[in-house]
Length: 290
Ligand code: SF4
Image (tube, rainbow, N blue to C red):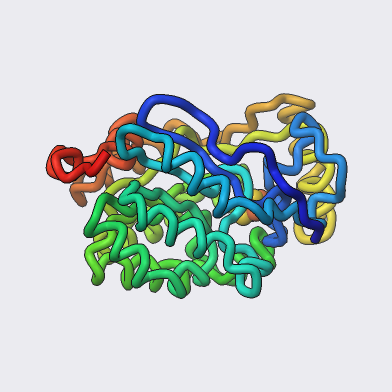
């Protein structure tokens, strides 16, 4: 890893911002879009760039905001990857968010987020905290192949359960669904049933498929060669160099997904999930000290 002093931290406008404290990621997911060439990494993806001044930048940005805001983190790299354990920058940023009573939506695959459960609970009391966890496969052996360097699905479901017990709302990202790997009705059903059991508020799934582009595709294909011999050739024959790589059963699986979520009372339209996630209830606005 290497350290930089970043010039800015928040992206976006209005009442909702994004924040990435780290660049690159050590979780090793075989399908990771963030390693695509278009993001112009000038260092190896696993050589994490650490924005060491992130808490100070966040504090400066929040001090100048007239209204409280929601901040999402984890879209491009996991805020709870291994180095966070010793660096604690995500935690420091949460402390700043709590101080300024701003809302937080963290997205992760790591159980390290449990370390900050007290802080997330505090933020949720003052403003709003949403924990988003990605789940791709119910089969923990397959999980070890798809996402080799982070905790397995069983553990992530425990994280969701613990958050729910503390009143912290949760959203699940059911993505990506890799053709001929995890695109089965049994997998989707098992994940959704567990989501329902542990009180997940909504599940985000745009489509049953994945995206592949330069940089990401080569990494993914190397993993297919290693773990699923012959599957790369099947992909090449079926999808060529397409960016969108849908499951052949996409339509049926999407119907299953929507029906299951409806039946279990979970949000399933992406817009509804995002609206829920980024809305700060009025009562919090009234408490604003700005
Ligand atoms: S956790 Fe996210 S950013 Fe990290 S390797 Fe996996 S997909 Fe990529």
